[in-house]
Length: 319
Image (tube, rainbow, N blue to C red; front, side):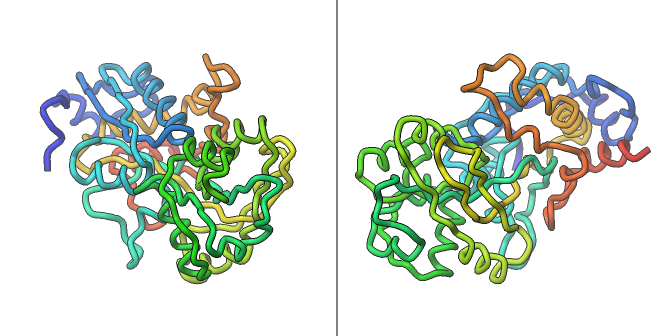
């Protein structure tokens, strides 16, 4: 399955990357003229924000590369587009990527682990919902169709049988529906803080429902991609802390991207993580999740193999 007519690579760039001759190159290898598409996420989600920041910095700092973002439903939608050759890079949560036998879909590999998402279950402050089982019979947003939120929230509901009236709404649409009373609760698997919930909390009183028992059920049923976590009281204005589950997010690439290009992208992600966080952006557009991007955790992609270009970059960092 090819990458389409809009993608061109220089032979010299590919050979440089494959040969591992890029050590010490602060601006990455020569990759020729490259037009890439990066699948992000829906409105109001961290994927949309951090994907835009990554695209901007790769375009600025990898000579010859131009990256265009592609809005999507998020994780599983991004995986589908990657496998179909509709995009070349994409963001996904680790649990949506790893299959039931612990492997990753053929044809895809990781560039790196980026940051961890936390599963939020949000209600208005005056809601009668006090704990997870109170979702019985309620109207609940499970996230956008084909999103990581939908994937994980459905797993939670299956493991802790509650018969809720599930709706597929994006982050922004979920927050608006919760505010307007057309749904009773919303799930959101996303970075902390996330724009849609931040904006809701700034204007209305909300609460987070603890998910400690549901997190334990996930750890038991699906060892590997989940970890216990806390959404801190500092995350959202006036909202107490809540225990929940965290899921790593990874930047994926198609296996047929040249090693030299992926080396340059990997170098840009880690070298400019601080710039991705806030440079040139006001508070509303800052990407605080980028502070989690570091070499120590970046290589931890569980059973998902690293792309050869990323392997070469991490190997060179150890020299």
